[in-house]
Length: 226
Image (cartoon, rainbow, N blue to C red; front, side, top):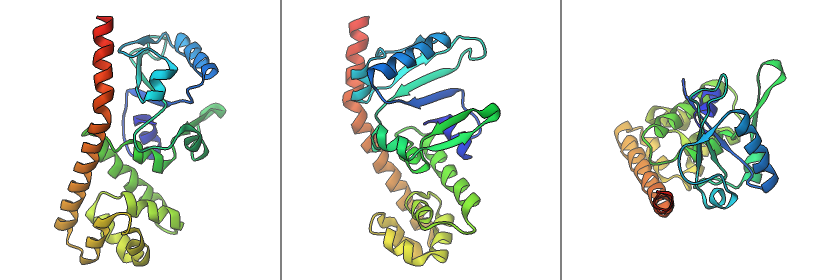
């Protein structure tokens, strides 16, 4: 659900961390704990790996020390701001086949983009690259739902103008959900960029407000164990 997923979608080049989203049921957490033991993973921050913390929206952080995984950080979550619950995420997942028959289940691209709308600087360039990479791969004959995704999530004035030229009716329709698309027919890239910046600013603030009470809880956890 994080940087590794972005790499597989073509939206990032490197990540030392692995982020996963799990269904926080007791038997599932037991299986995860077994896997963590095999990875020789140590908890590196509060809170502990508990169902109640995951359901509140906290991330649980580990550092791996097992052979071949030394130094890799593993972050575990089950709930994210602005993202559907696990059942929906699983239903909409993307399956990637790797060597030797191994499969990796990724967040579906729309869900990954939603999960990246945070207050962190590094996430917004990744959103832009994810959309542009998907457009480059599917631009020739895209299904309508893919065009809608690009119109909703593209973060480049040039790409938005290109989408309008190719799909003006869909652009006008999606503008009801994303008002900045109303600026695109004029093709004034400075105005579009200003609107994109404002859109990002609002998302960052929404994410900041979401995390404020959770950060307060983390501070309380730290004082309790300190």
